[in-house]
Image (cartoon, rainbow, N blue to C red; front, side):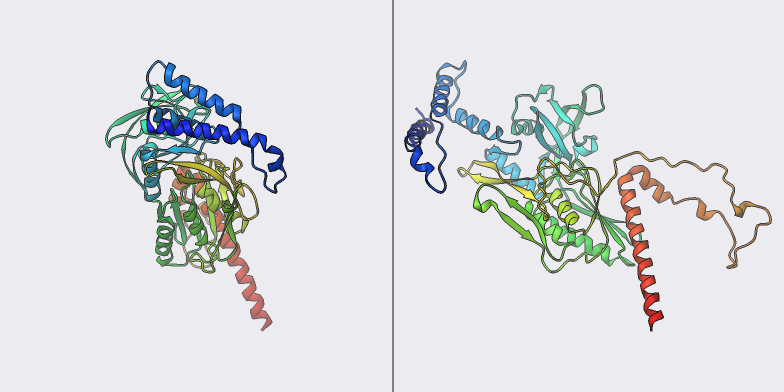
Length: 447
């Protein structure tokens, strides 16, 4: 008999004894200010009986350690999609996600109805390049059904040496039949923040995942935008298909745009599950107008950022409703080689709204769409008429201004949500400039 089995048998006996004691002293515990729940004596006996039957009657011999680990996995997987048992490999994978380098396909996944669901593909990874989308269901991996597998087992099957191939069978809304996607595994190194200028004065910041260095990288990229020629008139913060990551990173990112107030708070059954995170007095972004892009692949930490900026009226949230993953997972070590990831609390936005199973609803809903400009045809304007009056500023009339902006047209065709965000920032800047001009005129008139 193994040490682990002897330990588990002794533990079961102790639990049964405790259960009997709890039942016999139920009246006394009910009188205390915090009554203790009674242990389910019959259920514990059933567990011991099932454990023993499997050991002696299953068609193949299974190690006691494996049976007990499977029991723990089942107990956790029955709670919610995010609680899990972490063996040594799983724990290493969790740590590598927070540092930003790991092997595999570059895809954030969860479980839904026994299938693996794509939360979001990570930027510039095999999954993103292959066209996997948020909401896709993976029903087979290398022709092996995932139904009945745990999430960790499915993830392990998708991992492998760099350069090796894997075939995923995908079920997608709007597509009549499942289809196969072949991907080549790679070493996934995620640069969590990137930036660029969309147009003079209008910056773009993209966060693909919240890692330990994300806030620092964001502030460095923001400083680069601010150092470019001309005033920074507006910013787009793109959190689309961002599956989340570290809570602390999301708080630090939000703090970059806020100078006061609550960012997020957590609440659970235990006293230490209640935490509040507040903005510091300094903000690098100042009052630069901000539009935040979200969609159904924006989850967890990205929803914390969007929810806080929305509640404080610091940003306009544009896009589609986010994923709705508003729970906190705590890693609790069991030994040097194993741990459990347990959901211990829920996230709440500053106004008290729960993110869980609801997500963040955008201020302006813009669905992803393909935009095609309509050609004006043979349009005739005043400048085309023979003998038309010239401009009174002495400049020659021409049709150059009517030809349209090719950069805008390309942005509208490739990313209509980003195009709308840019237009919104331009509108805010026009209105702000007009108000400032009116106010200046009033002050000059009063002098």
